[in-house]
Amino acid sequence: MEQFLKSVERRAFRMAEIATGSRDDALDVLQDAMLEFVRAYSHKPMEQWKPLFYRIVQNKIRDWCRRSKVRKIFVTLLPSRRHGQDWEDADPLQAMRDPEAPDPYHGVKTGEAIRRLEAVLKDLPPRQQQVFLLRVWEGLSVNETATAMGCSQGSVKTHYSRAMNTLQESLKDTWP
Image 1 (spheres, rainbow, N blue to C red):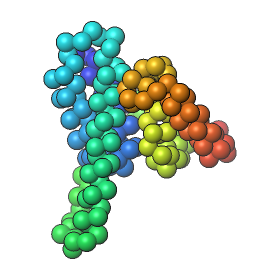
Image 2: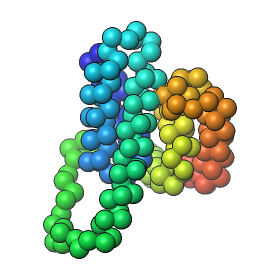
Image 3: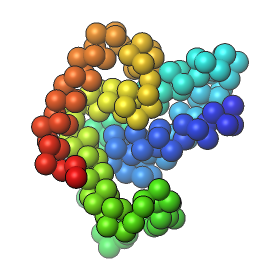
């Protein structure tokens, strides 16, 4: 179980971070998803873990989105308590050098392309965003993605196609 969670941790975190726009919220989503997964599905066969885990992640992201909408309403109505406070903490993982970058120029160019991709991903509708991440980043099949998201295979195909079209159009001049 521990090895499985380590294998999906980074990618699930990135999915949650893209969906929430916040490292802290993404960590909360991921932690909640992992705890719920271990409690509910540790007894299931290992080949079922990946789609089940990502279904929980998807549910946690949707829960976060719903809470976030309510929170935004209250934040706009109530005076802010955060004036003058910096709530962003430095993350040591961000400072790590990418060991796979062959040279600094390539790393900068790739980093810019990845930031552009992430910006476009953040603008996708949530279902398209999550289908893309599950299919491309996680390599889940259409069936596994449908299971993880709790929707039909046709819905997965439609959202994936729309996401790919948007990404291709938005990024056509980005990749070297």
